[in-house]
Image (cartoon, rainbow, N blue to C red; front, side):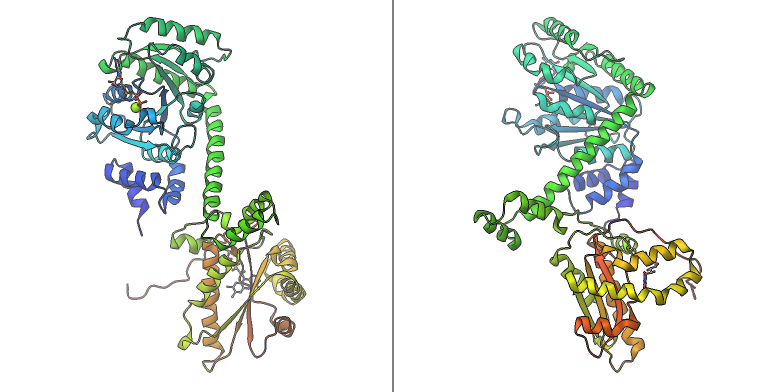
Amino acid sequence: MTDYNDLIDKARKGDQRSLGRLARLIDDNQDGAGVVVSRLFPQGGNAHIVGITGPPGAGKSTLVNALVREWRKTDRRIGVLAVDPTSPFSGGAVLGDRIRMQEHATDPGVFIRSLATRGHLGGLSRSVLPLITLLDATGFDTIVLETVGVGQEEVEIKDLAHTTVFVTVPGLGDGIQAMKAGILEIADVYLVNKMDLPHAESAVKDLQSMLLMSTQRSAWVPPVLRTIALEAEGIPELTEIIAAHWTHLRDSDGLKEWSARSAEMSITEAFREAVEDRVLKVVSRDNDEFNEDVRKVSNREEDPASVAARWLSLAKIREEKRMDFYDVIKARRSCRVFSPDPVGRDVLERVVDAAQWAPSGKNRQNWRIYVVRGQKKDELVQVADRSFPRLEPGLKKLYDERVVEFTRGFFKTLGGAPVLMVFYSKPTDEGPFVDTQSISAAIENALLAAAYEGLGACWMTGPVHLKNEVDSLLGVEGMDLIAFVPIGYPGKEPPVPPRKEGRVEWIGF
Ligand SMILES: Nc1nc2c(ncn2[C@@H]2O[C@H](COP(=O)(O)OP(=O)(O)OP(=O)(O)O)[C@@H](O)[C@H]2O)c(=O)[nH]1
Ligand SMILES: Cc1cc2nc3c(=O)[nH]c(=O)nc-3n(C[C@H](O)[C@H](O)[C@H](O)COP(=O)(O)O)c2cc1C
Ligand SMILES: [Mg+2]
C-alpha cells in the first residue's frame, strides 16, 4: 500500500519526484486520488491563484515563463498548470508550453504541468481543481493557470483564480468584438501583448474604450497593461499589479466572496463528475441489468427518465468508498438510522461473500446467513420490537432516559433498514464456545465489507428469547440464533464512541 502521507510530506519539503507522483495520481484519477485530495484539502487555502487567459497564440505561455522568472527573483515557490485546448487549431500546444517554459524545468522552486482538457469546466481540465489543491497544500505561494479563452467558455476561470489576467494581441480586430460579451466581466487585469507589432496602440485604445462601456462597477478598476513577453518588457509592472490585486482582495470582502463562489462551483463540479462517473459505469452493454432496461425502453415498457431515476437511487450510483484498510475498520460503526434506499443485490452478495471467507474452528463454517427484505423482514423487525421490554431494565441501569428512549425507537424499525441479515450457528461437536467465536468472525467480516461498500450495519444480539418466532418465520430448525444485523445505506452518520484505555498489556517488549 502506498504511503500517501509520506509522499505528501516529501512534496511539502520540495521533493519534485513525490510531487510529480501525486500529480500523476490525481491527473489520471487513479485509485487513491480521492483519498489524497481529501487529506490535502484542509492544508490549502494559502496560495494566490492567478489565471492567464486569452485567445490561442496570444503569447500566454511566453508571458507565464517571463512571470515565473520575475517571481523567482524572490524565494517564492511557483506552480504552473497549463491547460491545453482540444481545439484542432492549437494542437501541439503541449509541446509549445514545454519548450517555452523549459528554462524552469530544473528549478526545484517551480512545478509545471500541462494538462489536456476533457471538455470540462469551460476549457479547463477536470483535474485542475484537485491539482490546485495539491500545489496549494504543498506550499506553493503562487499558482498560475494558463487557459485558452476564445469565447464565453472561459468564464469559469474567475471562479478558479483569485486574479484573472486577460491577454490579447494587436490585429485581432473583430475577434475582440466577438469575445467582448464574455471577457468584460471576467478579468481583473487586461493586457495587450506583442506591443512590438503594428497597430499595437490602437489595440490598447480599443480595449480601454470597451472597458469604459462595461456596466460592471466595483472598487477595483481593471487596468490595461502593455507587454512584449518575448523580451520580458512590462513584466515587473504586471507582477506589481497582480500583487496589488491580491492585496485588494484580502483587504476587502473580495476574498471572502471569491471563496464562497469558488466553493459553490467546485462542489457543483465534483457532484457532476461523480454522477457522470456512476452513469458511465452503469451504461455498458456488459451490464445485464442495464441491457434489460435497454430492452424495456426499446419495447416502450418503461420510459428513459424512469429508468434513470431508478438507477440514481440504486447503490451502483453511490460514490464508491475506496478506503484504506484501517479507514474501513474505523468506518465500521453501529448504524442506528438508515436511508430507505434499496441496496443492490450485487453489493449484498459481496458482503455475504466476505462473511463466508471468515476463519472458523476446524473450518466447519458453521454459520447460516439469512438475507431478508420485504414483508418477512418487517415481520422479523416486529419480533425485535417485542423483545425490547426484556432489555429495558438493563439499559436503564446503564444509561439516562434519552438513550433508553432512542434505543426503544431504534428497535421499533431497526433504524428503518431495508435489509436484515440473520446469523445462525449450526452446533458442532466443537461446542458453543468455539462455534460462537467462528460465527463472530463471519459477522465482523460482513460488517467490515458493508462499511467498505458505504453501507451501515449494526450487530445486534438478536431476540434470543423469542427465538421460536424467528425460527418459524425463517423455517429454521436445530440451530442457535446468534445475531440480527440490519443493513442499508446510512441515513445519518453514526457517532464514534471513544475507545477505552488500558485494554492491552504488552509483555516481553
Ligand atoms: N512578436 C511577438 N511575439 C510574441 C510575443 N510573445 C509571444 N510571442 C510569440 O507568439 C507565439 C505564441 O506564443 P505562446 O506563448 O505559445 O502563446 P500562447 O498564448 O501560450 O499559445 P497557446 O497556448 O497555443 O494558446 C510564439 O511564437 C511566441 O514566440 C511578443 O511579445 N511579441
Ligand atoms: C456482540 C455484540 C452484540 C450487540 N448487541 C446489540 C444489540 O442487541 N442491540 C444494539 O442496539 N446494539 C448491539 N450491539 C452494538 C453495540 O452497542 C455497539 O457496537 C457499541 O455501542 C459500539 O459502537 P460501534 O459499533 O459504533 O463501535 C452489539 C455489538 C456486539 C459486538
Ligand atoms: Mg500556451
